[in-house]
Image 1 (tube, rainbow, N blue to C red):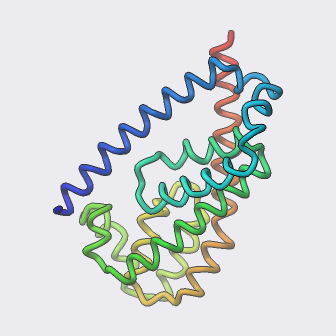
Image 2 (cartoon, rainbow, N blue to C red; image 1 turned 90 degrees about the vertical axis):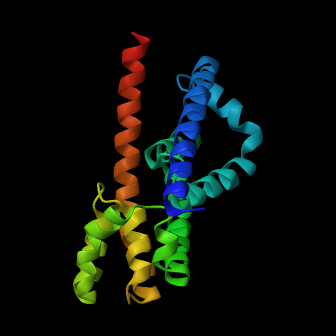
Length: 199
């Protein structure tokens, strides 16, 4: 399968997964789990072990193979498991997925990355890799910033001479802040939207 065909397949799967998520959200909304904490707890009562494990696996997959919009999965973690547990599950899944991306790129090289992102997207950030020290700082700041294309940059980092431990500590120390920022923004934004819909 060519790079273009793979990216097209990923785009199709993204659309399909987004439709499924919308249908599930409508279903959950009709169950009342978004407006009633008691109904939410009852719904999750028999999923206390399996639920978090499945969710973390989903987060890992969506980082490595981006077929689920990251913002939606972040929101799902906080909505279903609560602020602190949801944050922890999001963090674990995203960190593991980011580490996998780095080593996949390092082992399989540029050919692997081009199955996921276009050459144009890769070239946009490749200029920062000319100086390794400069890239390390750029990468850390980008991971810390809530608007950077983290998954692409993690793959790109795997092509550089960045040491695995340097990458590990940047991900572990910088990821929590972006996850927290996204989670809080999405939660309060969704609550505001639900209030509008409920009026």
